Amino acid sequence: MSDLVTIRNVRKDYRRGSEVVEVLHSIQLDIRQGEFVALMGPSGSGKSTLLNLIGGLDNPTDGEIRIDGERIDELSSNQLAHWRSENVGFVFQFYNLMPTLTAQRNVELPLLLTNLSAAERRQRAAVALQLVGLADRAKHKPNELSGGQQQRVSIARAIVSDPKLLICDEPTGDLDRQSAEDVLNLLNELNRQHGKTILMVTHDPKAAEHASRVVHLDKGELVDDGQPS
Ligand code: ADP
Ligand code: MG
Image 1 (spheres, helix red, strand yellow):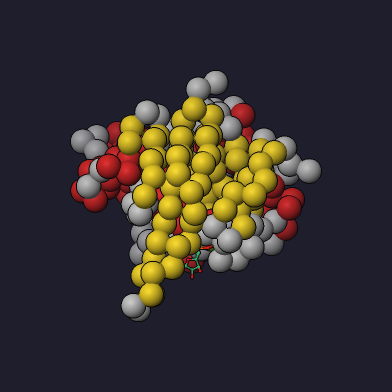
Image 2 (cartoon, helix red, strand yellow; image 1 turned 60 degrees about the horizontal axis):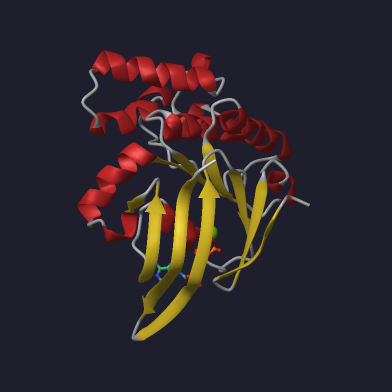
């Protein structure tokens, strides 16, 4: 399978007051189409920073990031926003759903940036909700759903535009064991049956067992890359 993500010599600095702190040092990483990669490592090791660079939420200080052949580190913030809307879906620990909108409307949100008709947006969101097993919760607002259900709505929102890459930052970090397993089984199904390439940060060794590959980050460096143990 071909590489979807290619990272070469990526460095990221943050400014803290007058100080510049190097958070990622010369990262090299390739992710092939169809892989399910778990990214692990201590708190503060740079996992979210790396996800944000790969997902085009931020630019590296130095180095190259290619997604499906495109150099996203060279895009302006406007171009990045457009690129993101067509190419990546994000899932966060705390779901980040809009509290005033129904599940259905939350899932439709990414489609507002496309030129699909309202009827097509509704239809696609309904299909995505069906896929995550929540067709019967379409009219519920987030506070009328359990944590696990909210996370599945956020996964529906992340895949509704059929992105090349699904990026999940501690998707089970706020869930009980059973809800976490449901979410992980769903991610597995998206990977195996729908061919989604997934990059997931997790602290949970059980979560990492669902991945086809585990990558470890420590103090801004990739230290280990292999099969789940
Ligand atoms: P992880 O997700 O592995 O816990 P992060 O990528 O969030 O780690 O953070 C890595 C380091 O970068 C931490 O020391 C954190 O404090 C710092 N950091 C993260 N985001 C910013 C930011 N926007 N500005 C300054 N420092 C940041
Ligand atoms: Mg983090």
